[in-house]
Length: 57
Image 1 (cartoon, rainbow, N blue to C red):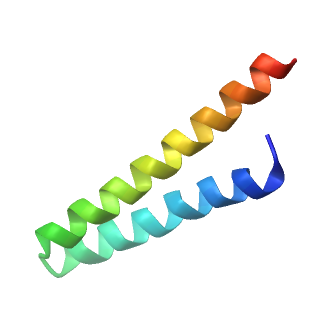
Image 2: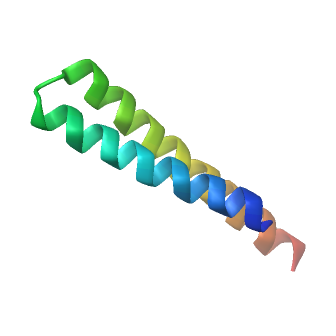
């Protein structure tokens, strides 16, 4: 997995979690859902890159 893609996946996870927790604190359900989606996208990106790495070796 390239370092850039790994960093991008982790950054999406962290930003998504921050957005989700912040929105939950101020009771913004729509923003909370967007944060959860961003976090999930980061997890999926990381899983995709890990799978590509396993297939290579």
